Length: 107
Image (cartoon, rainbow, N blue to C red; front, side, top):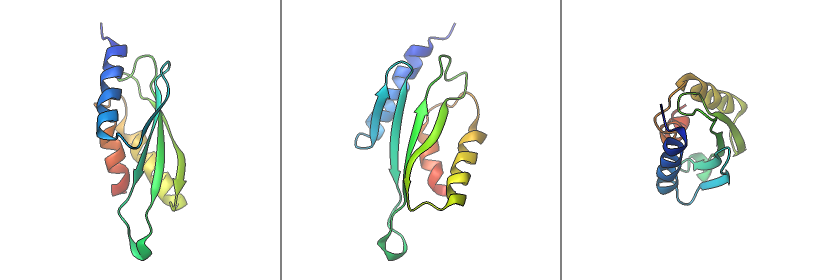
């Protein structure tokens, strides 16, 4: 039998160490947190920023977490849609959410 709470805690700690300045715990039960990601400056020195909110279900990682773009800055509507589609395509059993925050900027 899987120890979901330990797996969730370990992943949350890993993500917090990877994103120390942009990781915010919103609640412990259920596990809910945000990660803010910012692009490199592009044309006109403009950056794109999004705060992704994740909520683990009781059986995560054997079930897909809930996720949403909590806030965003300078994202086009089609970029928001592409990020949400990318997250949805990853499916159940995500090994670690950091891959998704990295991939969100490859859209």
